[in-house]
Image (cartoon, rainbow, N blue to C red; front, side, top):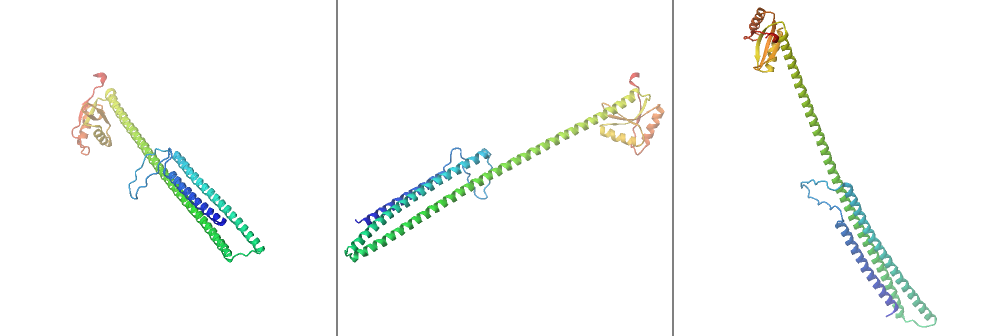
Length: 327
């Protein structure tokens, strides 16, 4: 076997072994990137399953802090970037070693070729005849070597293009994963904001309802207190008039069943200019007019009230009152 054939054989072995090693490294890099993308780390939140369009959305309770989830996503992103960088560094180192080996093989072949040409030149100077077939054989070898060199360069270019394409594909996958994670985080944050807004509005509505209820209760309590005070003043006034006044004759106009009816009758009498007094009893509320100085004046007032058709009171009668200190 000649020296040139031996060099070509060694170069082919180097290329073959380099191609196998490069393919193994790329395959291993893909597996590691795939594992980093699919295998969850410790404490990492699993990505949510994408529901089909139109499916009902089920709100999940917020159990993971947004800051913690963001930190875990950043750690996962850095781990993937580190793995990709390591694979790219390995591929670059292999290409450098391969190019160095190819350059060394080409250098040795060039040296041997130059040495052979020198020997042939020396033999020609000495007058040694070189057979034409030997010259033709050298030309053929040179052409074959150039073709092999060109083929090797094409293979290297193809390997580099393939590595660049795989690197670009890995970057696209990484970017797509990062975009999906970012979108999921934003969606989760939006739902959390909506839930907080609903809870805040609910608290405001509950507070308004409680304030309104308290105000209504206070107003009702005040109204009842005013009514009670008014009744007390009228009762005290009637009691004072009956017990301490010097008039002993009253005209009882009616006996009302409740306060509303008594107020209505009293309003009619006051509109006619009568002095009206209300006195509560166990059977109802008495509405009286007076007092008068004597029985005759009281009786005249009774007749006037009974004859007034606009009042519609036909059953008024005269009562004689005795102060408490005289009973």
